[in-house]
Image (cartoon, rainbow, N blue to C red; front, top):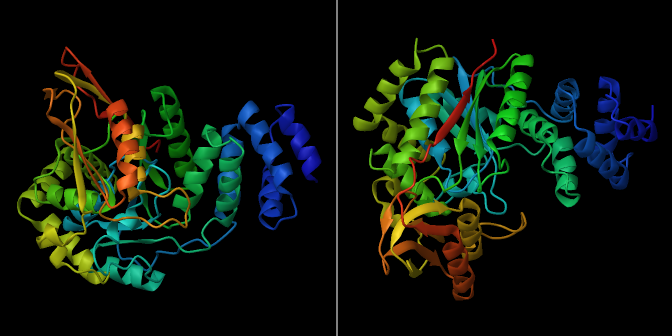
Length: 437
């Protein structure tokens, strides 16, 4: 077996065997196969695609290239969620405490942000002292004690995926559905949870630009999860405008806390309760999503969900007083309102442009080494369907970098489309892909 023959097969649109896929992953990970050879294979995959069996085998090979996190020490069912990335997506910080408040274990290993997509770990670190570097034993201990922990990924989870993804990013081979599905699922399956819900974003602020491709990705990932014995389901959700009003680390955590208080944006609240209810039902604790939904809403009203968030902050070394007093969060000192130039209704807000504006202001990274300004970002004053008058603020920006303001303003003006007629109802949850078993 050699890489030349594997390349030739995929170039001719032939299906690769399990042994060939494992050979490629193993030999590329240990540097036997060179970048230029792997790039050729990735391009051939993008041109000729992967069958489901190839996608499954690629997932399995990358999964077993590193450590698998054993969570058998957690008492009871363990649930997890994953979002394919978006702008203002703070659902993890709402869903996790909600589930823990009804006695369901929420065990999540998260990542950092890159580009216009925010990272859950970065957001949590806007709380003074919050530790996202727990050992696995500490992670398990906290879940057994309070039902929730959100922690950083260990260094040796799916090293093959890290290496392959870096090459995909440099060789214009990111957007193949089989490659995306195997990358996401290898990382999620490396953590030994029992139930997984995938939030597949579609629209301007996501990787998936069409509902058709989002559905294909969702179906593929759910089938992979099921084949590995994981109870898996997916939601396809709209990312044509940012989720909520806040885009930026401190700003988003404040918004998540407000949502747990029952004072959050309608869209963030809606999707968080939907994800939570679906996970609660799949966990087996409730006989229907409706029953789960009712109790989750009740635990927002009575404060139990917020208390769980506060408990998590304390257990992970954070200053829990930030939860009670949002003024303790760092907010960047330069504040500027972006005023509307016309009257009308907000027809659309390009989520990608808003995400890029927040990154310009300091809320995101171009490279993994870049520093983040935790207090920078964008607050949307107007959302899709809202009426706006000339001179009213569309958005408010926060930054410490004066030089970034003009570029951010241009991006925000480009993002907003103002029309004469109120648009049809913006649909947030587009489709559900249920567990196949």
